[in-house]
Length: 209
Image (spheres, rainbow, N blue to C red):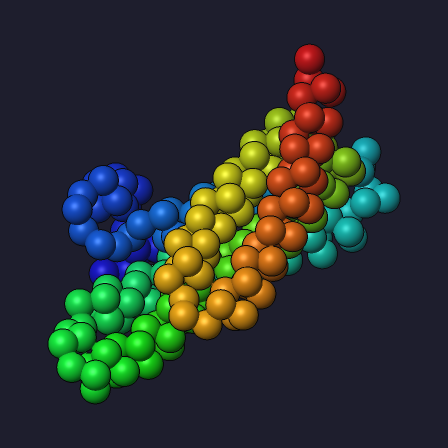
């Protein structure tokens, strides 16, 4: 099932069910794509306007980046589902004998690393999107700045949501050095980009009220 291409109502219904995927990771990727698209819309409403001719080239460049980010985030909805299945199976592997314990540990090390890689990538894409949306909010059409604010809020939510899907997997890692390295990367992105998204939102809010 292609979760990035099903109708919205179907995605929400499956998300609400006991089906293992999509879950928080896939949902975060979708929210990130929607937030990025909202920023992209600000660019779309800015280009072609005489009033914003001096920033038109920059707007087109940022829109191209958003197009790519949107596609990548939608792809990550599918990737998140793909990496969850082997992780789910690995948790159910037998561990009665020493050989079984060793094999389960070997498999778990691989699948946990894979399961972390997708939400980590979602976070990275959301950080890129927040950087772009900050420019749209600053230089884009004033008639659409509310959409930049919403886009920043959505990308922040997606960033935080994806982080939990990293942390839940690093918690189970036997390789604590790798786990702490991944946690530190997440911590840094959360620290820097939740603040940046909040700054964009607050700036937009201040200009609207």
